[in-house]
Length: 111
Length: 114
Image 1 (cartoon, rainbow over the protein chains, first blue to last red):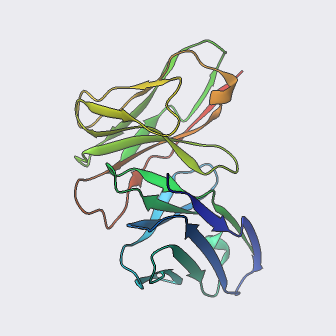
Image 2 (image 1 turned 180 degrees about the vertical axis):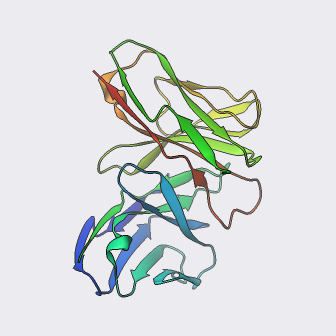
């Protein structure tokens, strides 16, 4: 089965700082999803990457998938308290659209 | 608003009781799935469905049953609740074909089994 490892597990940054969260797979990624979750709430879709070398941005968040399609990074520029939450990467296993998730990265942004 | 609706939001059960977690979507998505989220373990797939009348097991199916009689609804049944089933449960849906906007998740059901 596909396993996703996220790092770091938790991150505390000062407002305005940049940060990066990584997601590494044991197998080739055919579809890599990034979600954000606030405590007690559901998952909010951020971005999906499919092609090696692909990069997508939304507001101050940029996600990349490496050429080998085994690692993805999520980069936040000039972090704000609104960015705080749990960031989860999920991989499409390719079978009936099941997603396998990493264990998440807890982000705290200090004002 | 269109999306995935889960009920109830909170539930406390006694060991051995049974209950059904409801999930409904109004986006005509073919795929629906149930995940449970436990601290430090991310989300794990319980059961999923690729369309009405078709269901299959995920990573952690034991103790749970599902059915899919309509495209819109995908209830999750706990047959005899155990403390190990204390968790947050999420239902998700996605259309067939490409899903560039990802899977849509419900807001979750927080279940405690005492």
